[in-house]
Amino acid sequence: MIISLLVSGMLPMAQTASVDIARAEQVRLESCLAKTESQPEEAYEDSLAWLSSGNRPKARYCNAVSLLALDRLAEGAARLEALATAPDAISAEDRTTYLVQAGNAWLSANYPQAAIVALTDALKLERDDPEIYKDRAAAYLATERWIEGVDDLNTALEKAPADAEALSLRARVHLATENYRAAKIDIEAALNFDPENLEILVLRGQIREAIRLSELN
Figure 1 (tube, rainbow, N blue to C red):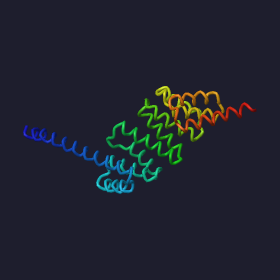
Figure 2 (cartoon, helix red, strand yellow):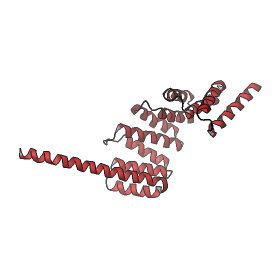
Figure 3 (cartoon, one colour):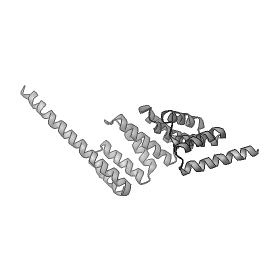
Figure 4 (cartoon, rainbow, N blue to C red):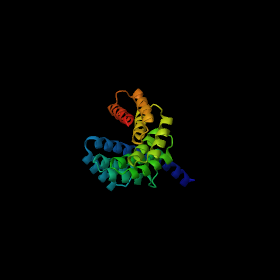
C-alpha cells in the first residue's frame, strides 16, 4: 500500500517533468528555426551542441533544417528522411512534414528521383494534401515522366480546383507534349485565378507562340 502510494505520488511529478522538457525543447527548436533565416551558421553550430547533449528528434530536425539553410541540400534532405523513418516517438504529422521537406530539398538539389521516393512516402501518411501531389508532380516533370506528373496534377486539382500553380504546371506538361489545346485551356484557367503572376504570363506567351508555329506547318 505504501509503495503504491509512493508510486502514484511520483507519477504526476514525472509527467510534469516530461511536459517541461518537451516545452523547453520546443522553445529551443523555434529559436533554431528562427536563426536559420538570418544566421544559418550559428543555427548549425547550435544544432551540433544540441546533438552532443542528446540525440533527440528535435535536435536532429534543427540540424537538418540548418543544413538546408546553408545550401547543403542533399545532406539536409538525407537527414530529414532518416528522421522521418526513425523509431523515435514522432507523430505521423511530423513524419509527413519531414518527408515533404526532404522531397523538396532533393528536387532543389537536382535529385528528382530521390524527391519522388520521399514524396511518395509522404503520401502514404497523408493522402489528402494537394500540395504533396503537386510537389511530386514537379519531381515527375523534372524526369520527363509526363503521365505520372499529369496524374498527380489531376489529383491535386480535384482537391484544390483553384490552384493556379497546379494549372500552370499541367499547362507546361501539355506544352512539352505538344497538346496545345489543353495547354491553352489550363493556362487561361490559371490566369483567371492569378492574373498578375509573371511566370504564368510568360508561359502563356510560350504557348501562344507554340500554337502560332504549329499553324504555320
